[in-house]
Length: 179
Image (cartoon, rainbow, N blue to C red):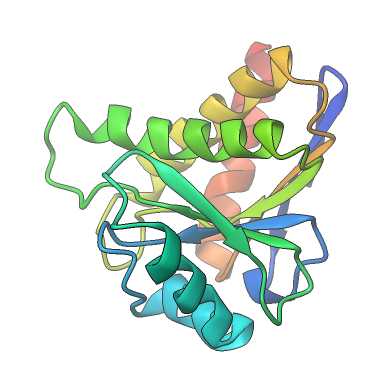
């Protein structure tokens, strides 16, 4: 599913984030930037050891709600943006941290002249963020950013399973009606 947000395209697909041909892909990283399971593990396996080497050489970690950037290693994407979403706790701070992780990722795209980026559903795996809530926050954050940043031509959400895809699709339909 696709939607036009001002001069940009917002797209939702079901697939494998490691196989995207966008300039950058987002990674659901942990604060230690130590690799892990789920999306993080898949990206590190596909990208090869240069991703971890670059993280260790340039960063001492990354706070929740922020993001850092590395090269793409063996991936099709030239860059990986490692975003740290919150572990879901039900705290009133959770939405702000999740929204900030996406916004900081998009800011890195702007700073590095990256016109296309693919994101996974950050924090909804082992971090336990409810997909319905996380999808609305992610989509709204991206849509709000794209309104003022036409330099980003494509933001694609790449969802691993059909249930997550459906939730994001419903969210995008709702949010684009409101626009």
